[in-house]
Amino acid sequence: MTTIGERTYDKGMRHLEESLQRLQTDRIDILQIHLIRSLEDEDAICAENGILKVIQKAKEEKIARFVGFTGHLDAQAMTELQNRYDFDTMLIALNHYAGHKGNFEKLAIPAAAEKRMGVLVMKVIRPRETVEGVSPEELIRYALSLEHVSAAAIGIDGMDVLKANIDMVKNFQKMSPVEMNRMTVALKPFFGGQNLFWMNPSYTDGIPV
Image (tube, rainbow, N blue to C red; front, side, top):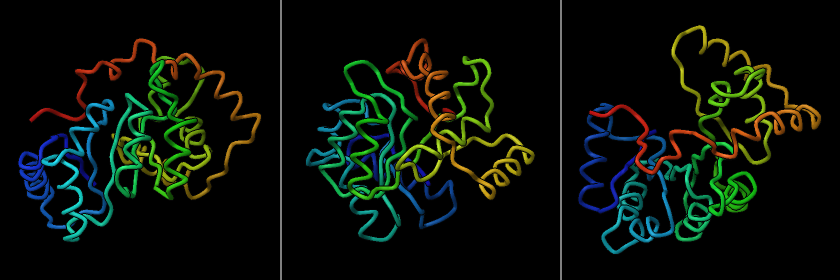
């Protein structure tokens, strides 16, 4: 799985070629448009010379098995983009929202599910940095217990973490309504997007090269 952060066809094709070289492959499972920022950004993506044409070509030529997009800034824009092309997946910051730009859990995720898209969630365990009393295990269970969520993207920094996550999934049990309500209350300040550095428009995921 990889993403393309460019917005024009020419730059997007170069970005895709570079990604394939780095991954040492000519086929990938999921190719995503990186970080949908706004309705204006969406217009650039879908323009005559926009990145959407790279996504379409990659799927038609079977370079990518599935195609999708990612985001954590604007639930409305991500919902609208779903109506402009038949994407396969959406990778979205869990229940993250910014005022008038919409609640992801109530807006973008149900819309994606209605189109039978795979809903992938990210930044699942980040709340533990600012919210006391929640464990990574609880946060992962919470994410995977949400309606319509297909999978969670979890960063791995060691074999012990990987083995623990595999064991959790093998023995997975959804949270009860009482547990879900408790987590929702505990995470409310975090979900409000207060003082989170990746809500800054200049923030970029990944490691600069």
